[in-house]
Amino acid sequence: FIVEGTLVCNGTKKDSITFQGDRLDADYKDLPGSWPGIYFNTSSKNNKLTYTIVKNGYQGLVTIGLSSVFPKLDLQSCTINNIYESGIATVTSSIRAVNCLVTNCGNNVLLTKGGNYSFTHCTVASYATSYIPHKKPVIAINNWDSTKQLETFDMNTTLTNCIFWGENGNIDDEVVISKKGNNTFQALMENNLYKVKNTLSNVNLLNNLPNVVPMFDSVDVYRGYFDFHCTLKNPPGVNKGKLAGILTDLDGKPRDSKPDIGCYEKQ
Image (tube, rainbow, N blue to C red; front, side):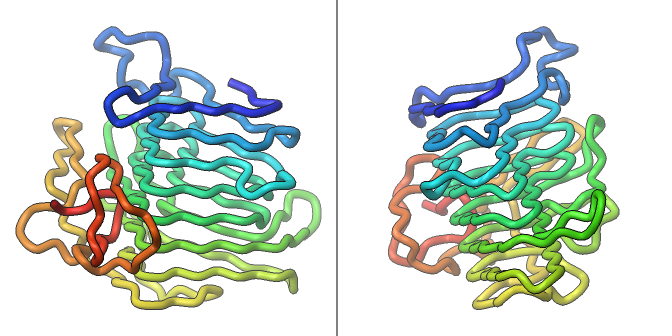
């Protein structure tokens, strides 16, 4: 699905919009890589997806190039799941994502060659499944390209009130931020919960919860069942977010004056 101009999807919680393959029979309905994905090319601009589900693709959402207005792609309460290669992938582009759930992809979020990005109240998580092994960080950010010779680019990324978590794989650091060269590089992580072995560099860290298990309600890899709400017992991310002007969560439920980390608010 190639977008040269503008794509607007006005889904709602009760009536969402789904992009997936057309094989819905039992053997294929959950097969990743069953369609190519959605590509926002260099000429594309003013794209907005609201309550939109993208699943089972080879790629999920790919954006190439910047546009004159931020963001090139605006994601509001979207779900991206079971993507073979990359759930969200960018090349020197711009994205704003709010209340989004990105799960069980080869690369969940891959932001390359710089750009301008804002992720707020998102849950980005991966568990190795029978289709997709968990071998890549759930979010990787860089400002460079070395295909022919080293090129570096400006980068501005803000991650606020998000969960970045993965298990059942061989990944030590679920967040990787790589900087090269002397270009402007601004990265801020504030009030996030994430899993890393090595201390993060190239980023300003404020009020985060590193290596604290998010306590998702239910993850059963064998049955292929994943519930990324955090409502049972006393999850560590409850009331630990900062006020960001986001009044509802992915379920359309209200957020209170002490918002939770992640795409869901405990009611």
